[in-house]
Length: 445
Image 1 (tube, rainbow, N blue to C red):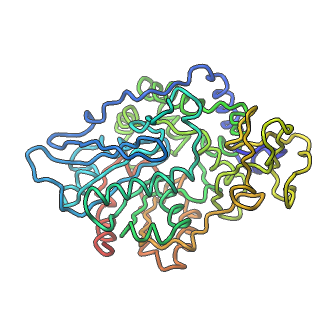
Image 2: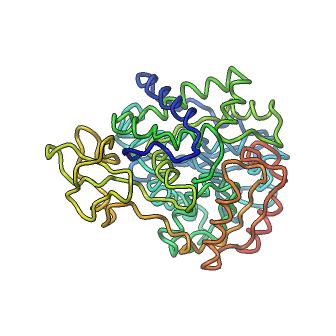
Image 3: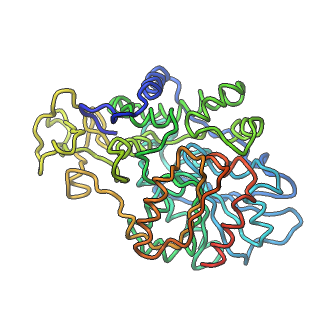
């Protein structure tokens, strides 16, 4: 999300990211996201879905509860929340057959199964006053998802079920949100969650190897999109380019999935195409990607996940053009900042040209740089399950997460599945990891 003289880090695959940036700009005029998917059609009989809504910062977040027609009520069972990954929604868990899909298997194991859709994703594109057709709807960061929405959803499920604590199973960036919440407010997260099983978590993005994703994060595409206030570009590309691509063009879909996540290793191509056609991609606020990009470009040596970067300029509207420095060594110790170096971009974050509002890192955090999340504070009992073939949640990332959460004794176990790539955790038979997950949950809840 930051401008500046650097354009990615050495070794980052620039071509795919620059191509993605050009595509974003070309599609600026057709970026209206609409919730049209019927999630009930993805659920095999005799299972049913009950939809509920959680209000968080004005956003209406969809939460789904699994039931079974003619079967016992899930009330009174231990509650378990499924949290999807990046550019997916709650539907990511549903398309597999009943004897393979995680929600159905967990239901048969006696759990009250819930699944959320993040703010801005399919099924959660609604707000009390804002329209997803407008820019303001999409002005939210990873911090908003992790520190505002996730606690609200967890508290709602606890209230609906009457349980003091619930378990959660996350995949990909869903795990990132739980780790961020637990790092920011460890006592609240630990008081609400009795266990966290995270599948292929992506927390420290510095060494992810998926070519299109790494290229996009490293290219600085966010430095073009956000200063121009093209908030709807990211959601629009997902809705109107990648979605139809997977629905109509099998080989192109394979290439897109492989570029963003790496190809699945367990799930066959036909299954991957079928699931992607009905679940991927969902929509996502552009600043979320920009926040990950800022952390990615600080790599590859040190694992770090930064809070949202509001820039170093604290001036109000009409007080001059807001500079923004990408090189941390060049950031001044206190405002007002000096003129940016040649090639520096505009200040980003909530201060959007031309009507920036003076929000800056110093006002929000008390420093000119956004602080990192400190995972050594995290205290939720956690089991990490990765895949040896995963090029998004790479071993380096998972090992550093494990090392950090050992500080408070939060790490319960760590496993790696030899045949699994990133998509296999939701695109292939969940029984490959379900036993490990159940062991972890039963041991902590």
